[in-house]
Picture 1 (cartoon, rainbow, N blue to C red):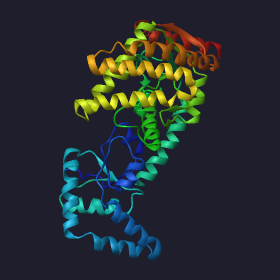
Picture 2 (picture 1 turned 30 degrees about the vertical axis):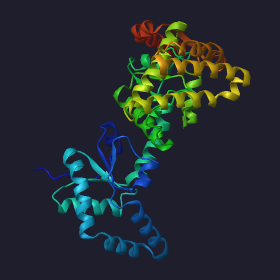
Picture 3 (picture 1 turned 60 degrees about the horizontal axis):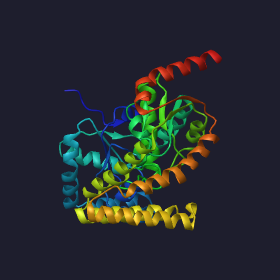
Picture 4 (picture 1 turned 90 degrees about the vertical axis):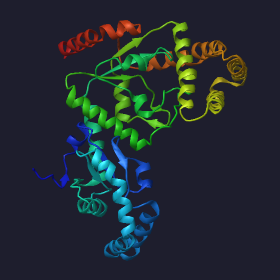
Length: 378
């Protein structure tokens, strides 16, 4: 039998192959940022990490190691190995990492080996992988051709985007729909997590679809609280645009489905029926309040009254029709003027306009023709 390698330093292979990762850092480190395929199975809990860290600062490396060995009782070792075994057994092609690929990785690897598991560690750990992704993110943005799928709020850009070869769903990576009403159940990733997800998505695109442009949805600098890299946002402003156009009735129907029905269904996954409904209404009220200053006092009061009426119909009669005048007013009087202004500011040329079906059916021809023209002009 071929002996398994004890360490891995090929970060490209790790991310291209979506390798399962066992993150043995403390939970507090994991929450600040990790990688999409990582599972947190710590060697040290937050308290133990803090105690050993304090010892390291005051007494040095050897004292910290000695303290760590003291804390690693037989009971602790048994508990840790028991928590690691399911992951290692279910992911034989995975690997483990700590912050720098140092003591914690080697101790975890040694304990696993004693338990009969030959599991590799990642050289350089989290810090090296994070540095690699930051570097690759900049390269990917510089190298890749970008096409922007644009359209007014409620046209269903994300639905179309996910049908196009070479697309990357920025809102999916940020777990947010982008608008003031775009929050999703589960909350957003940390900024570091978002950047890591984006870097991996672009890296995989570069190697798996090298001749395809990256298709991105038109976004502002912020998707909820996740910030796009400045280099990417700047490039998006000058990228060619495919414009999605749909009727106002289509947009209202889609908005009700996404922001009311789908959000309620998501909330029911984590709450009982009554709690889910109450949370939905609270979220809608808070989202409208969030844009009060931009609406102005009088407009806010009108829309707030509409929302109260819609909530009442929904609560008493399970009727969604009350949302229609509210959504129509928000789309036509708030979101559309803002979109028209932002579109006028962009430097990228509109290369195609059409409904969702036309765009999906013709997209490969649209993009091929555009890049042929660009090549000739150069």
